[in-house]
Image 1 (cartoon, rainbow, N blue to C red):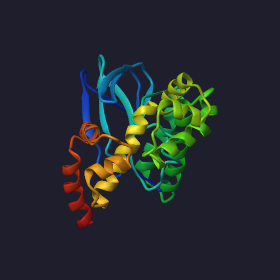
Image 2 (image 1 turned 180 degrees about the vertical axis):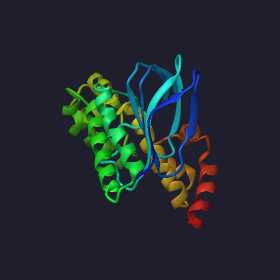
Image 3 (image 1 turned 90 degrees about the vertical axis):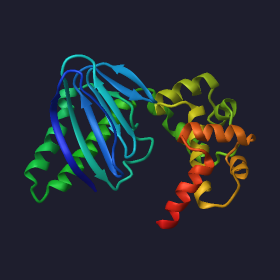
Length: 260
């Protein structure tokens, strides 16, 4: 079920408005910007043309600002106990061009109205409307030939996360899905909005974090289990990713894991 927290259509903010925050656990937000806007993506502010839609997951940084004049945007903040289909079905934190902006906004307006009047059936209706919004966002994000790459890219992505300790190279990834390396690099970036190499780093750091707080293995052993032959390289990459050393991460999260 999807629980709507706020739903606001055509909110108008003053010239120079900027927002920079991280939402609480469990809170998602989907936003549409009517006008040109700057949005932080992968740690860098980038300028995007009008009619962008962005879906943010819990804990993700939300940073945007007006380019010129007033900012007009539409947004829904919600809690969700669903998996939003699958991780790769909807790109998080990536601006997506909305082709039929006024038409798409009708669904946001309907949710805002349902949330305001709050009839007994509103939760079911709002959940159905949110599913329509997600389905259409997926279609806006993945059009044309990219749809055909979905099965093989999912296969590769699942393998990388299941076996991060493998000696993955761009060549071995390309061979795994029977593509050329240049095609894999370009199309994977377009589909998942991240590079193959970045995906591999994410999978290894994710595995390392689990091993750090759930086991007593040494940092060197964990580095090896996650595909690193050099423990110093692992520590440096972990620190760059988490802003913590592996040892400090273990200390903080083992204590929390025991409390929970």
